Length: 263
Image (cartoon, rainbow, N blue to C red; front, top):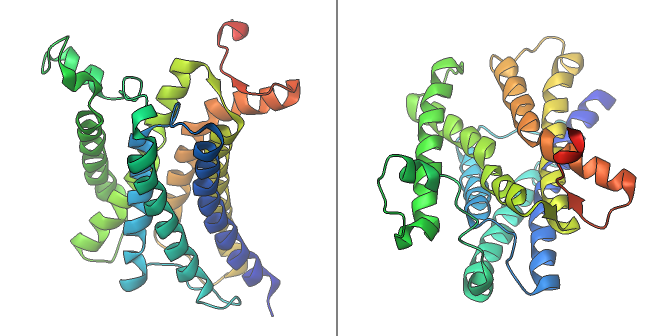
């Protein structure tokens, strides 16, 4: 047994466990507060959507194949994660939607207002579907741009699928962070949602960094692009992670996004 190969398998497994953990903490948040206040439906739907389409990677042989651990663990983790996400999204819509703060989950609405595409008093200002249309338009454009720089020996459809999935992952938490910065205070469970997402990114980045140190004779063409992608994803979350760490050090009961104290 090569311990380096075990380490790589473990990194991907830890990454998957962190993703499952994100759905667990959101579920606990909803159960504890009996409310969807503070939670972005845009983010939840995008994260769940990404997990569902990620299942396709097993059918087109894009998913990581373990070297030591049993192979079935990885597709099983992905299926469990996708099912948990779908169940959580359905539960949100059926039981918690009345408490959903759709007026705060408005990332992207300002673009429509800026170009006067909707009226100032239009009910569309609080429509999560209109806001999501902007988010997914950004994802589609980012996927095209990412396709132009991402090396791949696959067909156009498979390559664009990978780019679209990675773009979804990059922007998924932006609406949630947008809501956080409106409230300035974040509950521990919702904070853990972001932290677990960052840990998922960290383990994936560690995998790509470690890969050539385990397999000296292999060097995936897309390794550099994947490392850049995961680094960018971590940087997007770094601002919130700073306030989370500071709140932990100070012993605050919530994460306080206090920018005035940094001036």
